[in-house]
Image (cartoon, rainbow, N blue to C red; front, side, top):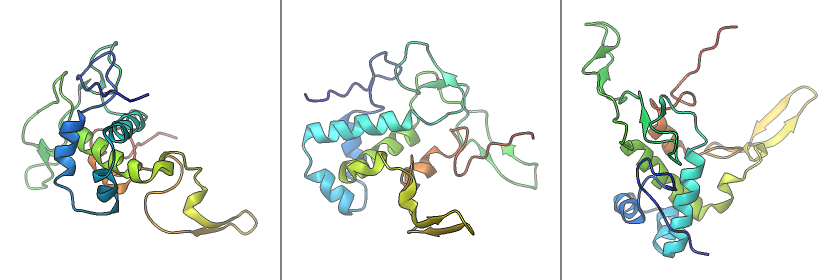
Length: 186
């Protein structure tokens, strides 16, 4: 059965943060690599499935703020989330110095969420096992006695990992992860 993308911001039946047409506009600007080449030859249904899966994976993240409504299907739009680029870090005038107090609106899907979904969809289309990894793919060897952990290679692999560019897009809008640190009192 074919997947139909519903990209209504805050919709009760939404399953994507953007339409396939909008996603394709973003993909068209990317550097050509193996994932983009595979995406170009994909059917509409395959692309829609990748977008759907990417949205589902992104929604497992813990984001700042709260959902705008109780009835929306996806994590975004959210309320109470300041746009990450509305302040500068400078020691001359204080740290951080706010340029403005600009927040995402209660009906706005941040562009960085849309870009993250597209990057992840393109990756997952060409790497369908990327979402179901066990976590041991990161290591050549894991040994308990004398604790010998030998990394296999660097990059986005392992349980619940996503491509590094997706991590960068989420910086500043999620509660934890690379670029965002959760501090807990012991």
